[in-house]
Length: 213
Length: 213
DNA sequence: AACCTACAGTAACATTTATCACAGAAAGAA
DNA sequence: TTCTTTCTGTGATAAATGTTACTGTAGGTT
Image (cartoon, rainbow over the protein chains, first blue to last red):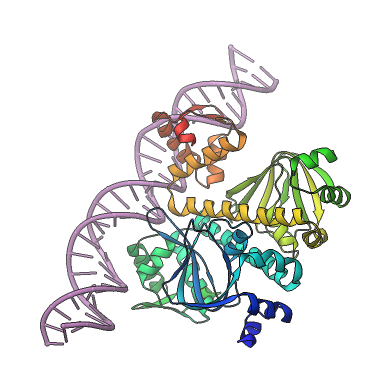
């Protein structure tokens, strides 16, 4: 298991890995578990070693708006930022594929930042990449129409899983884009007519590789 | 002038202030200056000591989408994140009120993080508050309609200046919300009819204090 | 005064997105 | 099989927003 942590976080120094093993607690969660709610206080930084976590913003009406996914080798930027002052979370985190995580108590954060160069760099890089990702989300909703956002969404999914099939229902996609199922169905149909995708039940195959680029 | 830096950044230690004075370069920019463009490499972290800088995202069509404003005592989070690896900027920064800034060479970032506790805390807090602000922006465009966004926008402005008048033309507002002038005019007129605002040329007075809360 | 320009108001229309209503197909359960 | 549920497709319609076109007005300039 020590081995795998080193594999998943290749940039961590051996000392850091050892420290994590020593101070962190290994935990598993099933798909569907909500790890973090808006308004909740955060007490741990979360490192993902297996599975997939969805980070989203929840609207008052219960709408979910996808921000990004966390996968093995990544960490929750929000938990890092907030732990620094034990702030409240402003987002929701839901397990979408059974996960294994390392929970790092918040007291470790500041300490490791000073003691472990590789931790420091990991944290900064996590901030940077997540900020960038959220800016991209803003771009999409601010400047793009639903059909472009849908294409972007599908591409992101296929990139994430490394395959060209997206196994989601129209309803699930609609929820994450904060629109209605009918709109998604219609737009997907148009994309199929343009030859970009092939639609199956609970699955969308991306055909055009140009589109995937 | 050393004095004022201490006043503007009250949490900085005296040693840190001295170090900043020593290594940073004081610069002034006029309103209208673009300090940072999308795609540009960042070589400095920017501390604002006077004036106001607008941070926005630019669409392909040239549309501007307001993210937030930077004011004295604040720093550009993007410049901090990016400098760590000398990355490209993903945003635009434009001076909206003549500013004075301290430019901190990127090499100082990492060094000070280790040496100055008050710098470390400032950087973390900057990350946190900006991330939060951007999440709020996402909320607004994802879940709210234009009339609500307009109200939020006006409130934010009056909060920022501490007064109840917003001195902007409809066109300027429309640009920042990435909509058209006509839409803003229409919605403002409705708000006036509801007794929320009073419309003057180049100025919107917020009347209802309930609304301002 | 006469003129110009930026700003604001508003009607008419186009487009996009949301909502409602319903029908059929696929998968699973009884 | 039959029943049931979930998923998908699609038309009709409503609502929000974007666009075009035109008018008037306030302020500044000559």
